Image (cartoon, rainbow, N blue to C red):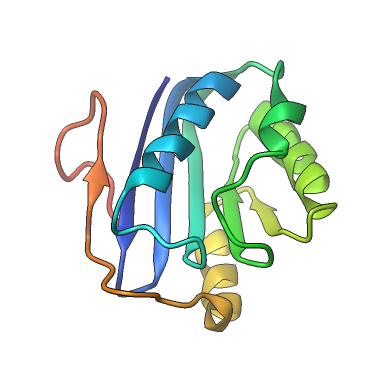
Length: 145
């Protein structure tokens, strides 16, 4: 699994993207990297794009649902076009919902972006947030918001 992200200071959001087989270990690693990024702040919105996910490993999802780098109530949109990823995203949405997290799951990117724009006033920019990306196995410029 390859995961990368971009912090978009203009829209005050983190755009994360996963490609390949999705597993809890890779997601934990991604959130550890994000937490250490000096440009990250927990009140930024998040767009998770899972359109490139080819397989899903369900083991560890409950444990993953207990860990979050985002502040409670921070809007997070997940794009999950395939049935398997959509189901896993809905499970994560339910589990995180008990922790007062605001997560919505969409089949397409346009719906997710529209929802983030609608609720985006709740995303706050703290400090000097600059554009920064982490990419593993991706060409520069292959993913844009």
